[in-house]
Each structure stands twice: as C-alpha cells, then as structure tokens.
Image (cartoon, rainbow, N blue to C red; front, side, top):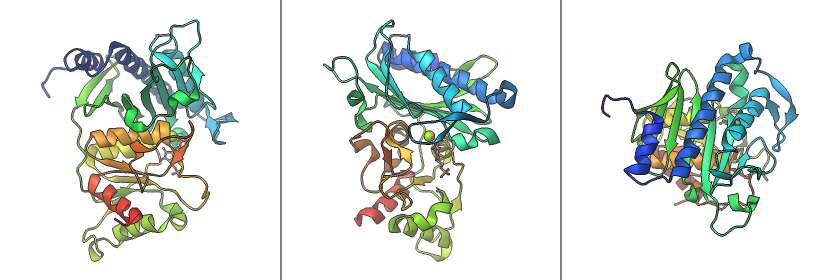
Length: 336
Ligand code: AHM
Ligand code: MG
C-alpha cells in the first residue's frame, strides 16, 4: 500500500469507478452503514458515562434478554439507513420480522441484514463487541418486499462486513474483491484503509471454541479438539493454543489477522436447533469474508454460503477459518 491515506469513501469511489465492482446505490449503502457504526462506536466508548450499559427489560425473537446497547445499535442502523433511497427493507437479530422502508421514503434495490451488537455478553465487561452486516439484492420482478425476498443463499451476497469495537474500531469489508480493513481515525472522524488483500494462512495452531460445551458436542468436533489438545504427542504432531473471546466479531477478526479456526458447532443441548449462531446475519457475512481471504466456512457438512435459508432467523452450525483445518473438521463429519 502507498503512503497516502485512503479513506473508506475514496476506496468505495474507486471500487465503483475504476473497478466497476459496486453501483452507486451500494456505495451509498456502505457509507451509511459505516456512519452508523461510527455512532455505535461512540456509544460503546462512552459506556457508563453515556448510561448505555446494562440490560433492557425486553427479550428478542430468539428469547434472549436484550441489552440497552443491542436496542440502541439497532435503532441507529435503522434510522441511518431508512431514508437514503438505497434500501427496500432491513432485517435484524433484534427484530422479529423485516422492517420495510416506510413509503414516505424512496425504495431502493437492496436488502440489509445485521446483528447490530454482536457479543452482547461482553458489553458490560468492556471486552470487544461489534456489528455484523450482510447486503443482498432484492430479487428482480418481486413486487413490494417480503421476508421471502431475504431468503437467499449467502453466495448471493453483494457486500458483507463487520465493525469491531475494541481497542481500535475497525471496519472490515468485502464486495467480492478480497477483504479490506479500515481503522477509525477518531480525530478526523473517518475510516482509513489500513489493510488490503487480507489473507488467512491455510494452516494454524490456534482454535476457538467454547470448551464448556465439550460434553454436548458431536463425535467429529470432539475428535478434532481432542487431537489439538494432545498436541505434539498426538496425530497432529504440534501443540495448539486456544482463544475464545465469545464475541464472534473479535474471534473472526483475530482469524482474519493471523489465522485460526473458529467453531460454534451443533450440540446436544437443544438437538432440534442446528446451532447457536444465525445463518443470515452472522454466519453468511463472516463466511464470505473468510472465503474472500482464502479461508473456508462450513456447517460440518456443506459450505455455509450454499445453504438455502428456510427462515430469517435460521440458526446454523459454524466452522470457519484457516482452510486446511476447516477441511479437516469437515472431513471428520463427512467421512471423506
Ligand atoms: P449474540 O449475537 O447474542 O451476541 O450471540 C452470539 C455470540 C457470538 O458472538 C459468540 O461467538 C457466541 O455468541 C458466544 O457464545 P457463548 O456465550 O456460548 O460463549
Ligand atoms: Mg451475534
């Protein structure tokens, strides 16, 4: 990368103009999402000073208690995005059904899905959290907009990303041409390109999984983790390290930065649930980012991005990160 500072705006304009990767409506959408993330970042930074910590007295559609910041972040994203004319509708972890852009505003061609504040259990303890988003195109010829329009495979995403609120606020983005990272310069108030062409090394010695669920796992996941734990003396012939932030954004950010494997697999606690994480606004955007950086993402049996969603808040088992490790865990499931 050259020494000159490239802002997110400039990066997107160049993607639009030089490379033809993004139409102007999509560029506007991404700028608006970035602006919303800046404002969420400010609320996160204020913490107790802004009175934003602690629980709200509501539950979301998944039956999880909401935190005040979950609700604030959701509102910030909706308010920022509803009036610009780039969207037809939005969907969020924190809303039961889709939010159609009110008819006082122009309707756009895109659909935006988000987990407004991922890692909710880390909000009050000052550990990294983030926003995850996925962008789809409204299917051609559909009249009005319905939940059905959202039910597209992850492979059909036109943009995806996340913003991690940690020691730095970093926005990570793909429009299908690799992965770029932008760090928030708080003095200037703008996101500045700090990494391009992000690549995940194919091999790793670091795994991320909630080990307290071990007794509930299925045999293939147990086998993989057991082999990591045996280390040098076992079939892997090397020692492994473990990291688990419990914010998917932070765990995936580490993997995009230095490699690793992240798993939130199906387990026996609630066997009818395919997993904990949500397909459309957690696994799909993260899966595409990881693939765009040379990694892989599966549910143990198939590529995440090939799964046809049956409903908006569908859950999925997630195994993603360094390609050779993800392929190994997947092979333990499929027997191939
Ligand atoms: P959330 O969207 O309600 O925050 O839940 C998703 C989070 C992920 O960020 C993280 O990987 C996982 O849940 C943590 O789960 P656990 O509490 O089992 O460690
Ligand atoms: Mg989440």
